[in-house]
Amino acid sequence: MGTVERRERERQELRTKIVDVAREMFAAEGYEAVTMRKIAERIEYSPTAIYAHFKDKNALIRELCETDFLAFAQRFVAFLQVDDPIERLRRAGVAYVDFAVDNPQHYRLMFLTPRPSIEGEDTSGANDPGRNAYVFLRSTVADAMDRGLFRAELTDVDVVAQAIWAALHGVVALHITVCRANDQWMSWAPLEERRALMSDVVLRGLLRDPEKAEAPSPGALRLSHSRR
Amino acid sequence: MGTVERRERERQELRTKIVDVAREMFAAEGYEAVTMRKIAERIEYSPTAIYAHFKDKNALIRELCETDFLAFAQRFVAFLQVDDPIERLRRAGVAYVDFAVDNPQHYRLMFLTPRPSIEGEDTSGANDPGRNAYVFLRSTVADAMDRGLFRAELTDVDVVAQAIWAALHGVVALHITVCRANDQWMSWAPLEERRALMSDVVLRGLLRDPEKAEAPSPGALRLSHSRR
Image (cartoon, rainbow over all chains, first blue to last red; front, side, top):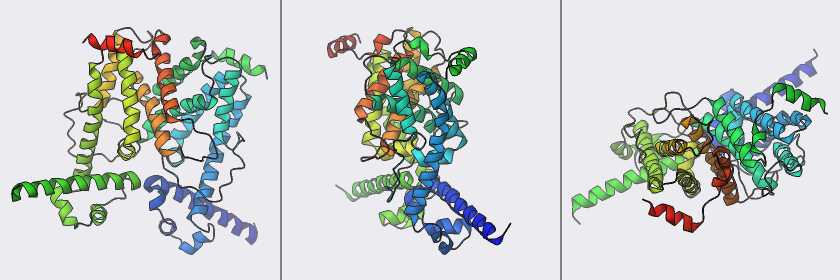
């Protein structure tokens, strides 16, 4: 490998390292408390080395958010292939909880930490489900409404989408923050039981025919996939 | 007022001030990042003055948690007077959201910030609904199950109680953390609509007879109260 390629690879590795360390520090201490200098100290580079990659803290936060929200949205686009919107919601719900449990620091920073407003944020992907997971959720809810699957009085797509999101957020937010082993104040049920009940309860509460909240058998699923 | 009383009042005022400032700082920066010295600097007292009240950070966190969780639990005990467990859940849900919106820093520290384990914590109130709000929630769910109001397959009191809690936690956690004015990625529905839909959807999903999820008319409520 030539010198140019090695330098570029090292440059990229340092950039990724800065972002990873910043994520960890922001998640632990909040955006306010962490300075560029503190990040430099943690990775044992000079502040100058960091400023060569990010001109200021705003630029670093912007890249961190863009990276994490893109990766998050990409988790859900595959489910657009699932024809039945209820099954799509069910599977996306499982993927959502898995994401949070597998990446508690990403999740903490994305959805549990107040974020400063970001200057120069690229919002061109705001309507693209591949870049904005809310668009995936919203379009799936709209699809279910169009097909008459939800109760007739549920007509506000955003309120329904935000209730579904809040239900899953509540499960994982309690899990990664409050739920502790040996809690003397309460006895925590296993995460999978809490997730499954929440999915079932919310779908039943939304559906015109609550029985459809039951997950179909694997055979029925395969059948519905072969339709596309 | 005599010198002794004045001194005692001033002592109590300083103690309350320390706890209030500590809550604010812990909520903003996390438990780890805040030291006794930083708290002293913020209130412009010497560290010695703070140590006269709390022998260490653990003692301060312990008092803070005891104070806040007690005040929180006290919000719900009055609802034990409501005979119908579904109505009790409905009202407690409104009170829960009100608490979070009125006291976002308390809420952030109680339920959105990882807490270190507390030495010497007094857990003697673990089974008292007046000191542990989870006992209130759990007993209300158990009451609804005993009366056959929930679907027959719902038999695990803790899983159901934790799903109800998670649903409300999700609504308020998104509200006080993520929900921002002028969000370019999504359009937030008003909090009250999100809360009301969540309450309706979760109760419908749990109830044997989903129609009972509808809030009764004020007249019907008064009637149910007069039964006690």
